[in-house]
Image (tube, rainbow, N blue to C red; front, side, top):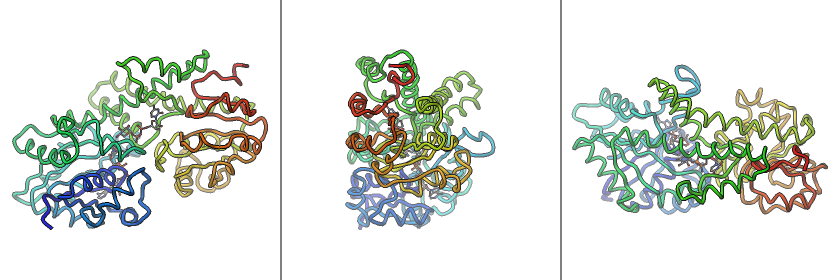
Length: 471
Ligand code: NAD
Ligand code: UDX
């Protein structure tokens, strides 16, 4: 077939997989190859059981897989034949060395670039899709140019991804904007246009915005910092609500009516999770520190500080309501994913809560509709969370449905806002639980007054606390 162009995506993860599958379905004239070094992940992408759960993704993949969309471990082959190469590898927080616990680990970016330089036999547009510190494109250029064959050009673009998990396919089909940063040289601008032409297959031109490379890289960190800041802002107010008798949902509604503030992203919660917010803010803080912008670094660091505080505050409230001890009590966590409609557990608040309850020697029951047992056991066996799999197996039991998880429990803790938790038969659950039966709603999901009629003691984030305030 005579393709208009060939695209390769290095990294078949939560971003590379959905993003480039959507490019494939929207651009049937392009051949899209998504490659990864992890053969299990590629095998799953080629099976009926995709490696990530994302509403609508199955249909997109099925519609174009093996037509113009290919998943393969042949990284080199895909690099050689493609004109545009997305680098969509993971950039986790560094675990050791300089900047440990804060800076982004760019090892995978670097190895992808070295591979591209080594095997490329023609000029390429290399697109930074991963979230990276500002000026990473400069390092990528240095690596590419120092390792490539004579006469080969690499034009580097920044094209950060703004999709949210759980809504990735709708976000990709109708993005608020597509951002493309490039050097403002004739070659840079030509590369920018080539990528804009791909998106223009389905994104209106006025939503494809272009700018210089460094603004584009920084805009991604800035967007995530501002979004997370909104959650920490409302969560800090939720503490004030609990202490005063105000209701955080009402406060959020009232302030959100101001069109300058807006109603979205003001839902108080047990804490934000996910692979991006904390990582990207710490990355920003580290960048500020290394540029000697101490006050700016401190300002953004508070967003993460409040997020940790919110989890601890919720746990303290739970333990206090349960008569100041949870030792040997059965605590049922409903939800383990970091938000609804995903099986992703990275930085999920539920992990932090489970850790605290394990430390108190509680028996923790867990149910989540999409997270696998293996994933839960792995997350909770991490150093810093527990002493390892033996302790986890002793203290944690995983269930296949909410009713059996709740049986004989002293308390239910809503950790994830799955729709199915709203539709449970709480009368039946109440009967099966120990008395007094408690519900701690970390997501402001349930109707507390209805539950109190059944007999539950209910404590909700950001709402006055009957148990601690005596009413
Ligand atoms: P992920 O861990 O799900 O996927 C990354 C994949 O890259 C892995 O499968 C890994 O095996 C593969 N990989 C690593 N090095 C490789 C190499 N040299 N060659 C081939 N494959 C390689 O990560 P993700 O969640 O998709 O995130 C990717 C990037 O996108 C990160 O920088 C992240 O910050 C950013 N991002 C993520 C989201 C999100 O919602 N998850 C949203 C926007 C941006
Ligand atoms: C985020 C950004 O939204 C997205 O643009 C970026 O590309 C990647 O990071 P994601 O982490 O997938 O996306 O999900 P998001 O919907 O932002 O939720 C993050 C966390 O914040 C979740 O734990 C969610 O439950 C929590 N949250 C979100 C709240 O507690 N309250 C809110 O009002 C919104």
